[in-house]
Image (cartoon, rainbow, N blue to C red; front, side, top):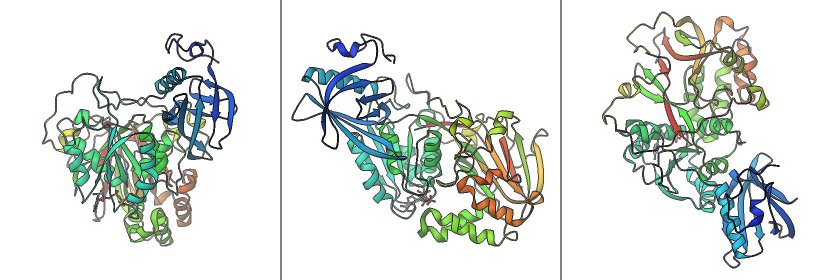
Length: 501
Ligand SMILES: Nc1ncnc2c1ncn2[C@@H]1O[C@H](COP(=O)(O)OP(=O)(O)OP(=O)(O)O)[C@@H](O)[C@H]1O
């Protein structure tokens, strides 16, 4: 095995750290089972290996401390993956003397260093998060989830935090708009997707939005849908319990952050005007299920499935929506091939580098000149669209756009892989893709209503992707015009970049 850092990079007093091969040290190791053994400990490229006892990946280490009573002993804590769950494990290692112990600790800290948040100018550091908790989100358990799953991780990783409980609709936006972004390393949001959206909206409204949009936003899944937290875990290959609590896994992302960019899209609707959006915009059956399921909120995330069963039993009468759908297509063969890959497929079928991402570019010099503070979203998004110029709703779509008319069961525009934590809708979708996906079901192409029913109830397994009538079209802009007078939910959208954890 090769050494991953050049000789001389480490403490010169500790000869064994300068070994040409794997860095090794003979130590006494005590595991949680209180077994004391003399073993060789190896520092590999990505992990520390404790002889034959086990190994911790550097990225999973949350704390390295010296024993208060004995300066020769290091205590190393990590949250390791066991049976697709994160569990805390501790190793005590005893070195020959206090100096070796200090050098060993410094080396471990160097290898597992917490990265500077991208909105922080160079040479500044911090270790504090602002935590927003919506006590009414999901099944009103956000506070309980915070206390039992998140606080222990943040405390053990010595992450400082301030907690604010949101008090009303729009509070998250107000907080993000006024936040002193020099004071925090990021904002952790313990809630459903709605409060995350409010925070991003607040950052977009700021005059220093270019820098504010680099403030990391961590979603701790406290709602019933939690599409963003699930999409983030899926993109990062972090196992998560789709039908259970996965707050620990998300909290660890705050303790050991990587900063992924998230694309924010621009939506214009007839009734609500211009808005930012980063998940999905739905029209027809899926929207009806989402809205109708509010009555089953007490049931948690299965509320969507309960409402779906009721609506599906009434097909086709409840879901025939006449519309004109116009879109700017992306005709890319690789992209098209990937649209029907399932979350359960081995990750390599997506392609080796499919889920690779470039971290958000950190601020280097002084803050860029602030933009105007009172801009409308229309102004803010001007010139940022991947699709080039997208006409406003009162203009015709360009001739090169495709236009289809028909009776649809639903039309969905999605920018993330999951519609909810247990709904892996389009697994190939990445968080910062320049394209998003138009998915629809046209009644003309459906053999029978039972096929729609079967397709809908198998989204949690990813089997909906097997149905040929489930159309997936990569686009960079789209417009949906209802042709009957029912409340319209969306009209079109396109991309804009934003950084987050
Ligand atoms: N204290 C509060 N009282 C009422 N509404 C609030 C409060 N705090 C935040 N909100 C609003 O609640 C909205 C929905 O919250 P959020 O997405 O966090 O939970 P949720 O809708 O319960 O999630 P899910 O739909 O996944 O169950 C937010 O957009 C915000 O406007």
